[in-house]
Amino acid sequence: ITQAQWENVMGKTGFHFDGNSTHPAERVSWEDVRGKESAHDWPGVKAVASDSFMGRLASKTGSGKRFDLPTEAQWEYACRSGSSTPWHFGDSEDDAEDYAWFKGNSGKKTHEVGTLQPNAWGLYDMNGNVSEWCLDRFGSYPADKQVDPEGPEKGWYRIWRGGGWEDIDYLLQSALRSGDSSSSRFISVGFRVV
Image (tube, rainbow, N blue to C red; front, top):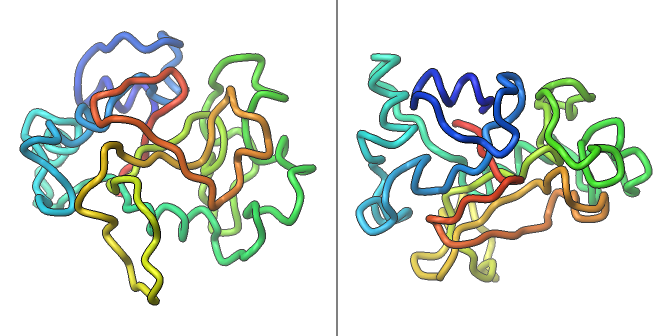
């Protein structure tokens, strides 16, 4: 989601890299995106708050569709785009600068979305620029085979994936995970909509 898209739904917001309408929205919390965790605690509660980004987007579009963050499994599936290598673009971070804004090429800032190469499915900025919030809480992966898992019901923080402009290229691997509390806002964390 770009700054312009965020502001179209939520109004003027103070981003760290403010005034760059085509750059990713950052400094938005998981709760800003879908509602207070105490009332909208995924996976137990699927509904989003009416005053959250997802709630206002649904109301604004009038489509009757539900918008939300991807689960961690959905995010990784989309990022990998059929690959099984550490990065969707191969076995080495050597080509990262062609696909991602990171510490080595970002100039310590975000960049316009969609300006580098997409993954094999045409998705841009899955790695780098900003990390992206997912629905899930951080937890160990189940040992048994899963189909579209929704993540653990308990845990102290929410996941973000993809790595951002301030991370080294090694940390942009498709499987790497990070995160923080649902109310946290960071200058290198944004989100995408499913």
